[in-house]
Image 1: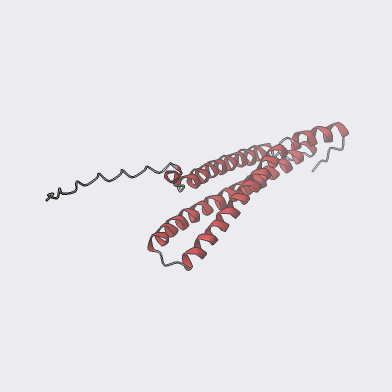
Image 2 (image 1 turned 60 degrees about the vertical axis):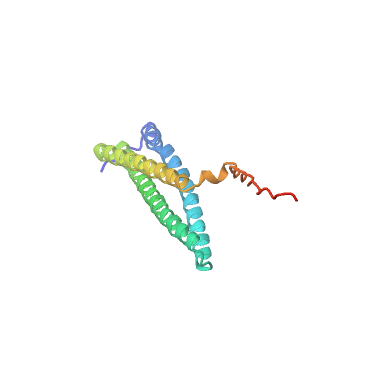
Length: 167
């Protein structure tokens, strides 16, 4: 393996390899955002489970089971999103290594670099889809009908009183 120690080659190699680092920055930021959402999902599930353990109200228990099912699905989506983002970060890291080795040595890894980069971008796009679905699910469970002003009940019609004869 020939190692190119020419300073212009090394500079160009670093510039080429650093370009995908910007995608890594986006991936890291998104992992933080999704991890925060996952933490809130877990916290909410704990609150609902705790309240369900201490109540016997059938209506609340039914709603709690439904909400816990939604929270479980949302948690799985968030975990899948984090997994895809982690895979993306790994593949972009492999791309950086392959590009750097391809520029500084006689290693012919450009095809592998292209494959790892495209796979990383694909996993990033799939993570975005999961993120979108999870956020849509988060709003589906909300009951916006409770925010509307209550409709006043109609006033009961006065009942006629029977006329009593006057003596």
